[in-house]
Image 1 (cartoon, one colour):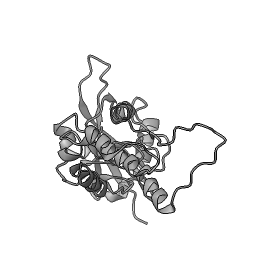
Image 2 (tube, one colour):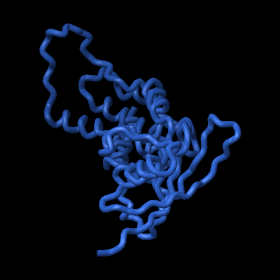
Image 3 (tube, helix red, strand yellow):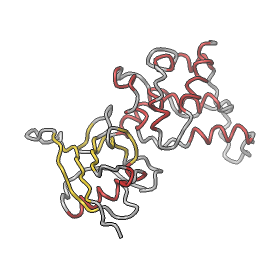
Image 4 (cartoon, helix red, strand yellow):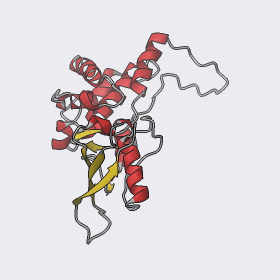
Length: 241
């Protein structure tokens, strides 16, 4: 039986609330176990070595998107990343760029997503204003429902935002997550907004025409969402306005 590997984790540490603290990388060493993920390793480090280590998690199953971070240079989810994927046994962890830093590996994606929702009005604006709760809901074609479900799988982890070169250069760019959510409502037959309405929201360099098509969002999305397909779809719709 082969001997368990010793893993070296080089982790970004910084508390922005402490005026005396400075950003630094700190090394931690743990023994690898079968099926270990970066998330499991972080919990082990916090439980046995440093309880002050800050990182986020909720579901531990790739559904909540909370544990997103930059692992060996790639934005992804810690709970879905096996330590066995790194032959060198050396793993560096950094917080997602493009978000407000809370501390160490924890960033405020929730604040970003809420501001994005308010900016783009990411909620259904129905054609039918009849609010009778006893009225039978209008049926939807299965094909349309399937398209909407595909776009609703976004877990708002922020990985596509951090992997986007345009977003890093232009802070006002809405990013792939914003465009994906806009596409969801543009496809929804129940929404009263027209292509012209959406054009006034994303028909500019901060929206769909600002994307440089570098595919960072597509390559890193942990849910394998069709980012570029939807961006191309919105470009065709906005160009026709």
